[in-house]
Image (cartoon, rainbow, N blue to C red; front, side, top):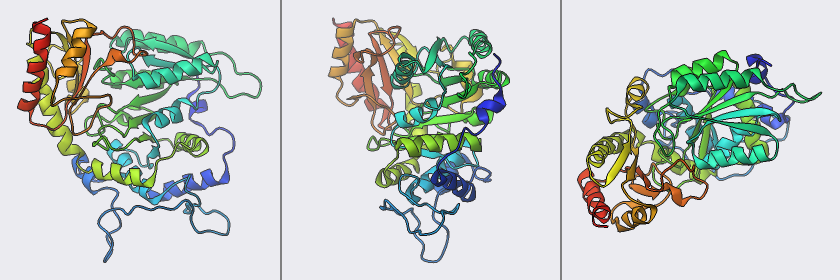
Length: 426
């Protein structure tokens, strides 16, 4: 059964009046997607209060669970704190402007809330295609859905573009017929680029174009790259998803997610997932994320420059077997990254010439690098990814994921060098 693109982009059923009103209100809100300013300027200037005499320069924190209103809910009404909040709205405007959408983004209470807001829309019988190396939370959620009989998970080697397109074609043509009265199943193609934790680079323009031609819905987790580095909506992605916990907020003090789309019907469906599921962000957290976002350009510039230096030095270190970083000319993803990314990002992976125990000793010997999960903060983090029992078995026991912060690069290298002595002296 060939998937019909008009079916997957249309509105499904009837939503509560409050959600319909919020969607209409969002259309009035607008964004700066067509601004003449660069993204580096928009990250600072978008989402500010109106320029009026004595108005605040920064967005206020609005702590209210409900809003005045007695009559019918109008398009511009907020109504209730589970549907929207003025502090969210400013951050949502900035994110949509950066990603290039005229529709406001949708904040979620966590990155996984945002993931669930997209994958949770698939009808029974659908297929979700994901890279074999994908953030383990996203993969675990889809596997759970598969166990419950909601969907089928198909994993692909994302660097093999031709084979991925073959798989997409096979899946789009073999969808089951829906049960009487049920929503038609569809294929959702979930991408990461670069992937977590292997730093594989997908050919996003080619894959997204192929998926659209097959009527396949697409979502790109843009957490590693950020909209300052790549904008998947411009290549035809239906959704862009972020763990705003990471680079967007940037200070390891907020847990938050976001979804951006250019399609009003898809935004409405995602809004329903958020409003009815309740995976909302708090206004204080939204304000912290907005404040952190203002320095994204500076943080990315510093951390990516340092990541390039560290990747080159680790590549040449005798204790290191392999480094994956798109900025290395010999990396398999280098040419693709040059074509579709404005820089090579701030995360790299290093596989040591060591076993799991020795690799763990390297982590424990670090004094400046922080041994912790997550990434994208101002501080540099390191983690042996196989310490997570549900990490992909193809990920080496000796692989370290390094999230480079904004510290002095020579200090970061000095700390890595002394810790790597544990491999050489074993």
